[in-house]
Length: 395
Image (cartoon, rainbow, N blue to C red; front, side):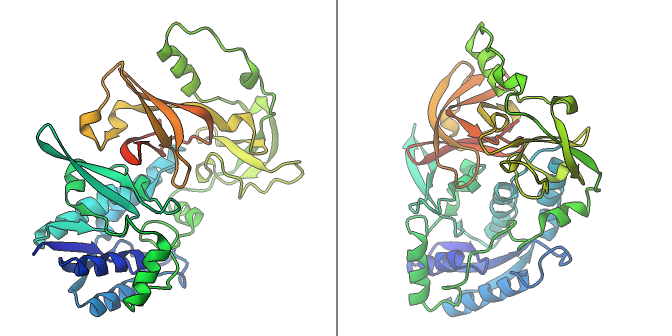
């Protein structure tokens, strides 16, 4: 009998995951990951980890499976929290959920599971796993979940073949309503529980306060850039080759304070991210202001009026070599090769047609349509026919 360790989070998805595996005849063990200690920054009455671990325990009892809590808060702090601070300080926008899957659930947690003699680790992600024999050895595929509305493959875009080999995603074939229905029939306490929002396993953290603990507030200016700014309207040069063209379009606009007008104050450029609208508190404009760039060195936030402002849009992005990750190692592009794909730069974004171009220093992703708020530090993931082939950190 194969043994599988389920990451029970106290939510409905992981509860149903454990239930289905048990029905399929696996020997199931439930583990709750405790990743956070500091209650001072969580919104105390919303989804604290105690309540979640309690729900997970009740589900485990109901299913008749062994259960324990594992404390991974030290590794979580080192690998996720410290990384987030470092990224925000550089003026980049990290994605802690993707890192949490790569570094915690499918690394630290997986090691614990394997020490418990597990053959597999299962999570309640809405995605599917495929397998094909290529050149005589099994190749694992990460496929989108059946529920288009909930597909979570993007969050797993940094997994490796070794990690996928041992992973199971039992609810990937189901939709969220079907999952709730199964939980209700199985009389699981989490059937009606609402989905948790917020950082992976921290509960609802107030991000600004969380950041402010480490990143000191510094007063700076908000500058608004006109929509007819010269860089948006200048004529496009002739390029000697495709790489020069890609490099030109992947280069972000640069702004000086003189390029616009000062419209307000803020308390730290590192608290803001491209595409953000909330928290600027500047009135008197016809349309809402959006952050189009932050400069953490001069501590200026550059904004543009309206969500169609030219400063928000680009159609090419670049991923440096050390940040490229192929799940399908067998499909890795060599210098000079291209690949037509569909890609997204954030969770829940519809897939967009794009072409990958491999060059000596990295990988360009050229979108057919311009993308709003391409943000350094975020992940771009590329797909072909529902399969997530690889991903990278936008530079």
